[in-house]
Length: 335
Image 1 (cartoon, rainbow, N blue to C red):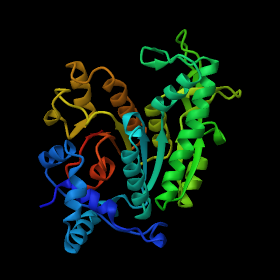
Image 2: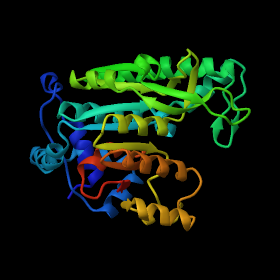
Image 3: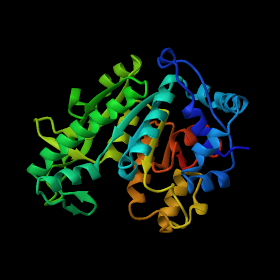
Image 4: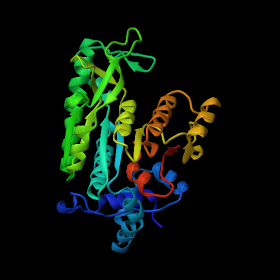
């Protein structure tokens, strides 16, 4: 039997007819978590296995995917994309192809992105030192200009172009557009124009989704008085998911999920409840940078999102694997 990774790669590699990319219905595959973990450690495996797929194998992948795609057809899925996965062009292309495939089979993806590495590159080019305090980017006026330029311009339009090259239809936005994300400046001293989300206006996103577009949202918000604010992409994605009553919120991160031992992927939790998350935090297992991610998931669930997922954006086709296999590849958190 082919690995889950190879199966999802085969599904993603199937040619998409242009007329199918406006909402029809194809498919997926089931596999063991141990096989998925080993496949994730060998990202060059998928293309080799896909090359050996017969026509029957490919059709089988589609047939096994059908229940999942039927379940999510017409549903909205908010995907937060950022971190190391944005630095690798081949990984970026796979994420984009997964989004387009989901759109083509009737699922409504909304992409919310950060872009920290790209911001740092441009700050360095402009001779501005990147500074952080308690995990937050110190955003003075000069840095805010760069953040808005890079996130709302270069990164956002690059993702839109990639989606359209892959056969999808995308519209690039930032939180300022139509007041999608309203925020207030955080009260912490010396961090500058960093905001916390106060409200989300989903009207424009709902219109775009209804018309078959993939909204691509950069996490630059407005304070209501014209001042741009840099907001955390995980938080923004969670609030957008809640405002859209999304079926799922998926956080693409730089780790495989929530793990009992952060250095051992075999200790990853496939699923957790809110209660179990709180117990793991009390035990110190959920710690450091995972705390705000899990908190974001719990808040989204409390506001009506169906399920939340933390997955490794560096693993090829992790988005398809999480959505279209029984075991998934990350950690699913539910109420």
